[in-house]
Each structure stands twice: as C-alpha cells, then as structure tokens.
Image 1 (tube, one colour):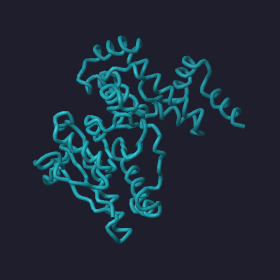
Image 2 (cartoon, helix red, strand yellow; image 1 turned 90 degrees about the horizontal axis):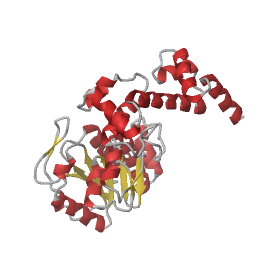
Image 3 (cartoon, one colour; image 1 turned 120 degrees about the vertical axis):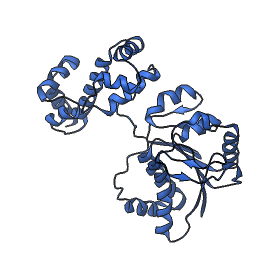
Image 4 (cartoon, helix red, strand yellow; image 1 turned 45 degrees about the vertical axis):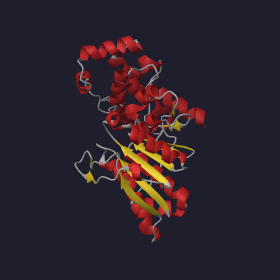
Length: 314
C-alpha cells in the first residue's frame, strides 16, 4: 500500500485534480485492495476552493509527518500561496525520500521550494517560458511529463493522467495500470517526452510574445484575428506588433503564418494527410492559397515536398 497525500492549492482546475485522484481510486477498485491509501492536504488551515467552486476541506500539509507519494496539484495565484511554511513542508518531505509528483501549476510550487534544482522538469505549456526564466537552476523540458529520480512533473490534466498511470505501473505493475487505463477508455498513450507544443517558442521570446505564440499555436486551423489575440493579452494590436518587431524582428502576422506553414510542412513530410486536409488544418481555405504561401516561403510547392518525402522514404 502506497501512503499518498494529494496537496491541492487554491484555484486548482477540477480536471487536473481528477486526473490525479481518479486513477488511484480505480487502482484500488481493480486490485480489490488499498493499493493507494490517499488523503487530501491543503497549504494551510483554510478550505481550498477549486475553479469550479468545489471545496476541499482544510487539512494542513505541515501536519503530514510522512508519506510515500505526494502529489501537488495547483492552478492559479501561485505566488501568493508559496508561503515559507509550505516551502518548508515540501523540502522536509523531499528529504524524507517521498516521491513527489507535481501537476499543472504544481511544478512552479515545487521549483519555488528549491527541490527541483538540478533536475529535469516541465510545466503547463502556457508557463514554460516564464518557468525557465524564473528558475534557471531547473532543466526545463517541453514534454508531456518528466520523471527525474523521485521528482515527477507534468503539464495539464491529460499528461497528468498518463503520469499517474506511470506511477501505478511503477508501484504496482503494468497490469494494474493497463486495467485502470482501460476503465477510462484511455487507449492512446503518447510518449512522456512528446512535446506539449508542436512548435515551441524560441528562448528569445518575451513573456508577451510567448503567450501570443501559444495562442497562435492553439489556433492553427482557424487563425485568430490579431486584434483578438492582442485583446486576450490585454494589449492593443499596435502594441502587440511592437513587441514582435522589437523582440523577434518580424510582425505578428508573419510569425503566425510561419507557424501555420511549419505545421503544413510537418504534415506533408511526416503524414499521408491529403493536401486539401493539410490546407484546412493550417487555416487555408483552399489548396491554392496554401500553395501560394508555401511556395513563397519554401521555394517549392507543397506537392513537391510530399513527393520528395515519399521518394526519400522509399
């Protein structure tokens, strides 16, 4: 039996918490025993309220004397919750040999305590750039989840589910993990090292251009108007353009087009997706418009890229 504490912070996403908890419950059901004896913990003596309004009753983590596994699930407003007492609790449990899993905003809390220094780690893709800049002693990786000795980190709910399934397999065997995955009809298991983003932002991005990049990345098939992107960032379209010119030496429009064309090239070179579907998947209404933009950027039409790819793999 693995004694497990699930530390839930204020403003945590319900789905991220469920990804941590429900696989443990299912593991107990399938094994017909307490494979995991899990309890909730909170940062302090206040009830925790999730973004959905659900409440986790107060159970201060500083009262936890020992556990085999600690799962940290966090979402928003992390800075104000990273109290000295919480940081001390995490360092104490880490020194005792506890396996620590951090989900969504959880890696930020773990890094703030110092326990991730010298380790590989990841966090939610929206925060990767800022995370890397804030914690230079952490080896930040753009991956779904990362296992570094006893310290495991993941992005949002979907990779967290895979990480917890990996925990079940590590502690109680692959058979039980497979049974749990099957109960959720979770049949596709991406590799842990698979990037959260298809085209991660370059390190030279600022926080603003990185956030714009992420929005663009998430809307390749139906490109967002630049004023909408600027509005989501609390900026004017003109200010957003200035950030891109000063930081990357290009316009936001050109950067967005580059992402769409890079995705088109990936689909052409590494999949057999029909050309019409490639165009639609990258925000071009027709093959002709994709062909014009692709040829101008890469010097050859997309059909030639597909032909070259097939010839090279023969």
